[in-house]
Length: 280
Image (cartoon, rainbow, N blue to C red; front, side, top):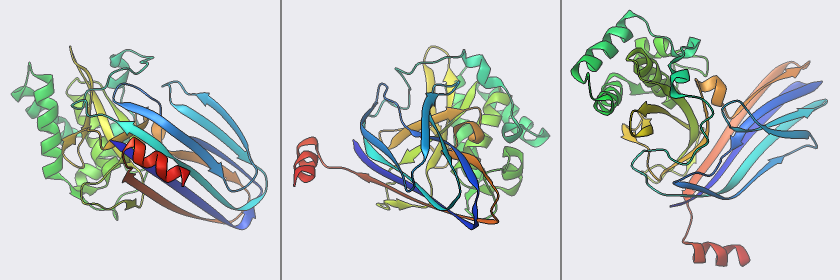
């Protein structure tokens, strides 16, 4: 599948900020099942941009700017994807899977979640993959998708108690419960081509990957209750959202800050069709 993606984030500062630093994890990498055909980052104002790879291998840009009132960061490109049955291959794994058993503030469990995970794990004691599929299904049934009650700082415990949240919350709950069951899991930020034809979206997408012995890392999209497919474009990974967030940063000075995000994910035409369109 050929996915055409555009992601624009706009900041407005009133009065203007005296300085801004933003860390961008918005550039995908290529691996088995995903090839980045083209990708670019545009900033509305002249800013310094330094690129490197973070500890997890994510392509990261650090943007710095002086006094500014309005700032728009846009990424866009074309990614070719292939369905691998949810199994991730061809990535450069810098750490052993056991690192992803580490708990963070956003992925801790409370007694109710620990008991929830323990009961599911007991049913699939020697079947890690079966445990993960059941966990995904149970989380999907437990939760209701709702954009209102949670924020980027909402923990898995809080979202589990609310029984409501967005894809980030589903991923955090899945990760927390998988780790509680002894299975390494990590957070993934990216994009998703919706099956209902809605190409304009209010934000990017998020899911989890869990490590299955003799199989490797497998993607689980609990918000849609599916393993990852060629409709998913993988951008960055981390222990939780904070390590894989598309944009994190700070500003100096200024007063109020207004933020807006616009995302478009659509299926591009076949290679020949796409080339003829760009040439016209």
